[in-house]
Length: 428
Length: 203
Image (cartoon, rainbow over all chains, first blue to last red; front, side, top):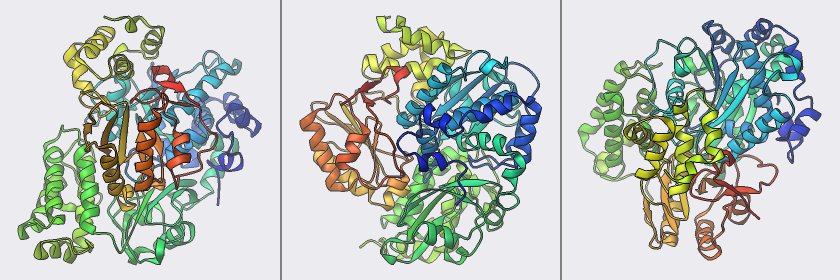
């Protein structure tokens, strides 16, 4: 297993979060190296690495950095609002190796010529926030943050900001509104944050995992990073395995293995040797896969071609005892709860879908509900295609459609039998 | 305004942002610590500190689930029932906690010891089913352990809620190795974060 992000926490479980351990294992040497380079040269290495955003959008980070408008002030914002059901990778990176993130922030801010960076961490993650705050304070004390970092003339301040419990703030423009002290409602794009972001100033928003890779990229060079993994899915990636799986947890893997290898070899297969019914390949927003896809490759492009996405890297495995309607209901309930309410199709549609799934699961479904599920879904995401068409400002609404299209494509008979039998056929 | 608004901590929070409006969310946590929850007075104080109207602060506070608009028990028990926890029995854990604490989902017990809520994903899916007490995490909680945890909270009344301690006593499967033990925990049913004054040193 290639370990770019997790080697320190695996080798030194008792103190991988401290500055002493971080420095003893080569930490902050990449920063020294970067500060001896020009900001443009640092940016070039990130571009060469071909690393794509690990928050789920998978946009090439180096390319996005190139969009940053050339005015001051400008900001770097780290998205640690990890809330996509099934995802817990950033939590581990924040708790177990916060200095790796802090070093990545300093190097990235240097490349982007930002004097202020924010780390937005979800409110339900006080422990990860404490660890990052401690790392930031240690870095200040060591002269690695603040004025004139290591005598380079470059200065940077970092503020750790806690969210208030809202999934939507993981969407970058909602996050920026939240950070400005407003409701976490997504903004219409364009303008993109790189042009008008925080306080309408140029802003780069990157995921925790993306920025945690930056020290390695600078130490080893962008070319070394892009030499790992298949085209379009370079480097390693954190996958969160959960659900009906023997060895749940985070695994840093190189993309390009098969799903069978990921679920059965790495994940240990299904508890009780039960049969695999379906899995979510990339967080609750992603359309589901069924066992005929087990020998597909785990890459961005292969998953996209099969009509889904790797998203946030969350793989949720479900065995043959799982009711497809109940699972879909639980996911749609999530999106209905987390809808910010700005756009009618999402605000009204997600809760309508949720209510329909609830009554189907509880035996009160009507025959017309099967068509109505798809009809309402089609009004949120016209054509029900992938990637989804949008009637909304952000992708949250269309995400709630994924479980509906999944159960109607793969388990339509099971959904229908809930209605005809007036009960859940899997309820024992 | 009460004295909390002139606290050095508040000055530091206001100084951490280029625009003081950005301090609304941290200050709402600090104000909740002072007033118990986001009361009208809490929101009025935050409005004065940030130069906003009370309505603007209320619109922010009401958007986020962690700013409570009613009094919360000494121990806020949040049970994840999102997809990964549901698959691993989160619903049974919620039922056990409601029963043992005699507090229905969404309510606060008589006497104000417990508040119980089901919550959406808390990022502990590898350690499902997961529970938070005052936002401090316990992973791999079975219904019987959840009941024991409620009794332990009721009988022991810890001043500081520590995740590591609860995990050791009542937890099981974790999302990952937690690493070194923490001595900081939650003083109140608010996220325990030192810059907001809501974290405390435990045993």
